[in-house]
Image (cartoon, rainbow, N blue to C red; front, side, top):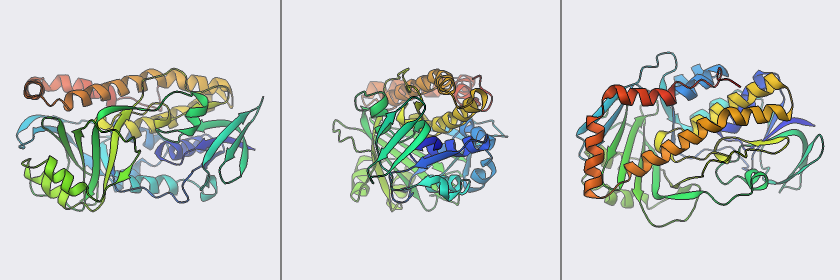
Length: 383
């Protein structure tokens, strides 16, 4: 019987497997896809996530594959500076990298036998001391504990929590990676440009490449988790016509562009029942505004493993994990939603007020707010 079954082979699920093995547990990852292939997008790993990856032993490998971010800059749509803040985390720097590179490094840290592909979760049946998992390939597995790490449209969550669909927040997000940096783009700076109902973000992802994202308000809601759009170039070039010149160059030079709806869920204190729990986007999906979705999943993984190590293979370990993570994840999700709402203001007065506030806000205030997010240490937080 499997000790700890993890449904979902994304960043959170794979990190959880690594962390659990570090403490001597025997996890098994069940992934619905026939192959673990990540589409062409970047992921930011802020110091809180890098610190957690260092704790599980793959920090050096991640840093060697990533682009380091030493500064965050806010600009107008024309490229005029509003504010810049340095990031002071020398031992655990802020970085960004291709999601496929991160996934590859996580997979390399695990025996291939631990990952079962083509296992799409259908249901689970709980008994006194075991759980039976059923998959759509007609296979089943018994486990002692179940962790659902299967993303924003989690099938495990549907059985445990049984709530409604994620909530659409009124704007679309596009993501891509350009093969090279346009002129005037620093190699170690994350940039966010603000317009009226549109934003554009730029940052290094290692190997000389530049990751970017774009956001624009819309009333259309399709609730597609991730979609590759062949017509995205024309749509984006039209939306961002007249913006800072590197924006157009990045869009034009990107071969694969992903489109998602900005969605999240209200926080809930119910993360699991009995010997089950949830992790990452399955329990606290967040809008991408703070770049903390993947980071929080990595934090979850480390705290979950520490709770099992402290309390043993018990339900008490799961409830301790959930208590330790609820406030942190609820607050980050709320802050990300608020930041996105303000960032997407499209009225002339709203855009003016936002720009003035950013430019006049003292740097030390921003740095203090940033530290609240970045200084969290999943390896030492009280459990």
